[in-house]
Image (cartoon, rainbow, N blue to C red; front, side, top):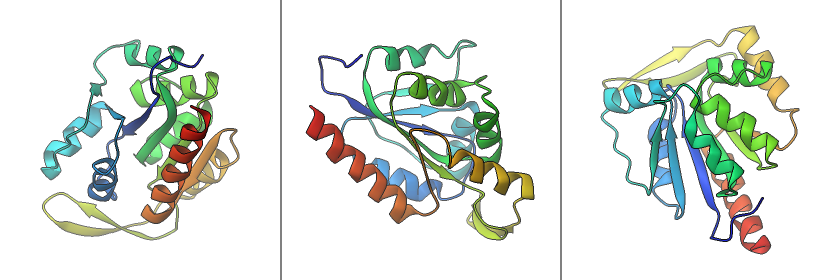
Length: 181
């Protein structure tokens, strides 16, 4: 169901610092975006000392993920999950929706809202930001890489592996939503 008012972009953040600053930089260039924070995301933002300044911010504070009802009301044209931890990807691959972000993904799919996911674990070896300006090497497990490969096959789901692809996919969705309005 499409809302009578202008549709917005929903952006969910999970508990990873991997390209978190760059994701926030993209968010701050966008109009009409609402932010959804997992419990871990709220902690990680504080740990890294990052601020966000967007319209509405929803935090994972209810057992039934109350904010997902906004998808039923047609408030959003796109869901972005960036960065998405291996835990979040694993849950979404298995159809588990037991927190705000995984519920958003499930309900976006059920209401035909496309999702764009920036998965953290996309290569056998990565460099990632850690708190206090440290860069660490991480080595995703084979199960993490397999889950990313699986979610790439899901309907209405675009998985991106770098910031340019994330930004390009978002811009494409913004153009598509304007064409439909």
